[in-house]
Length: 397
Image 1 (spheres, one colour):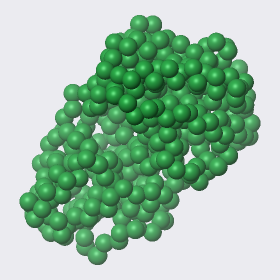
Image 2 (cartoon, helix red, strand yellow):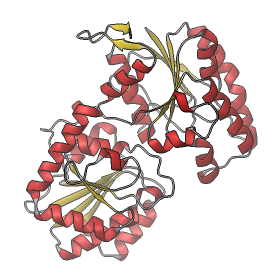
Image 3 (cartoon, one colour):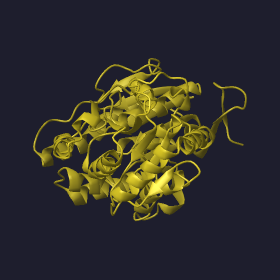
Image 4 (cartoon, one colour):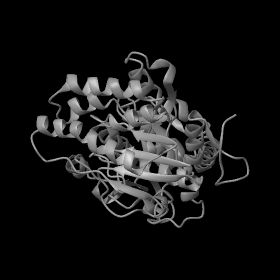
């Protein structure tokens, strides 16, 4: 079986270290692990193929010119002709799988015209995101292209219920929408991994992994940790990641006198994350109250796969993933005092923290491995690996 995986978004470095990059890499690994021949069409790579992806066939799409916004958008739309020609040259394929990108029409059009399934993975309302957080010159044009792309897809893969609701706003999509949340490879987080940043006896360690951006609730994290630390100084905070909020984070920690209790690790290779998570007693996802929380947070899946107790905001998909008192603790979004209280509870009750962490890992193993996710995606296209034969592919009867 041959599959075309398409990612034409210049903001997604498929071999990079961003969360979206890890998402692409894990889906590709799972596809290859099932014996599928994959041809990757991508615009941005940021490095060589990570381990496990050496068998990929790669087609490098041309970079978009660094012009003004309107010209860049026109160039992105015109690039569909090149992508279509590349798909026709590299084909035939049995399936096209695309990570939705603004201005991209060619992949779903190719799938429709050649009579093969076209699966379109939608991770966010990109038109709204582009207009709010970046620049968008032709919003009406971007909406029109999205409508056409959504209309050509055989199935629309929404990573959360909130993304599914967004897709239902486009005519004729409802019957083709499937909610398939993100996943994680639990084998990448072995329980016997050596902690990278081991603590002295008696020190309670909480941690955050992810990009340092406004919607990740870093101010909530700092306030919660400040309350925890000032009540008991035998605590520390590890922050893994980087981003535009780092200067604000550093100044906030300095103003509160917390610098000696906090370690800012910065951005790391994904292979380093298991050891860092093993250094934590509790992992946090303290999202603020957001009007549109459409994420399927990879960090939380990784926290759980690593067997960490999780304290997170009860918002969006996290309310379906985490069952309070069973596999984690949920707090009201943006409520630093509630987060601090949950952390203090786990500090005082390490047995509860261990139980929640073990249950979290079981949840991932049973329901949210990338292997499970990809098998479900293939089933939507009428394809499944034959039982007991890891590399064999068959049609769903």
